[in-house]
Amino acid sequence: MQILEELYPETPIPLDHENPYTFLIAVLLSAQCTDARVNKTTPTLFALADHPRKMVKLDVKEIEDIIRPCGLAPRKSKAISELSKILLEKYSGDIPQTMADLEALPGVGHKTASVVMAQVFNKPAFPVDTHIHRLAYRWKLSTGKNVVKTERDLKRLFPKEAWNKLHLQIIFFGREYCPARGHNPYECPICKRHGRKTLFQEYDKSHS
Image 1: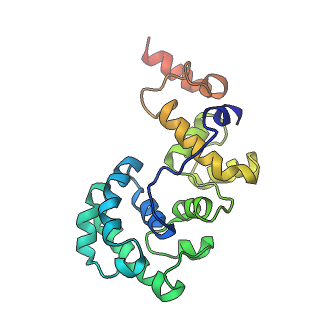
Image 2: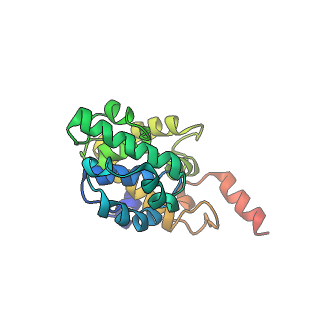
């Protein structure tokens, strides 16, 4: 989309990381957590363990205590420990480069695997989180029934070579111009052109 390209010609990865492994862990931690919170939390964790070989030496409770600010700490800490063991046993400590292998890792869902494929291996993927799902519906790009359909619709609408950059552009735009709350569709560069009619009706009603 031309508006997104004009506003965000560059799309730096929002999660701080040191290598593919730390990026995978950061993405896992970002589930139901802000990138800013993850970036404040991971330096302590990565100072102790920036490789699976180091991570497996940490007690799960120690990992849990460090990542607690990111939420879901018991589940995430267990997943981090278990996937680190699998990476050592099956992949010599490297990150697998297929969606199927990534999704088979504990705590790694389709969205997380898609982000890793796109940002680490530069393979075409269109990660759809709750924000992109919401905006795709708001902009009439998908019916919004579920994230699986939204991903399928977006992949159909946009060329494959644009997917990796576009998903970050949408995220950046949503944060700056098109938030879930306090959003004015009349001032939003995209919604004022492509927003749903009900979006304007709801805004007018709430401000009447």
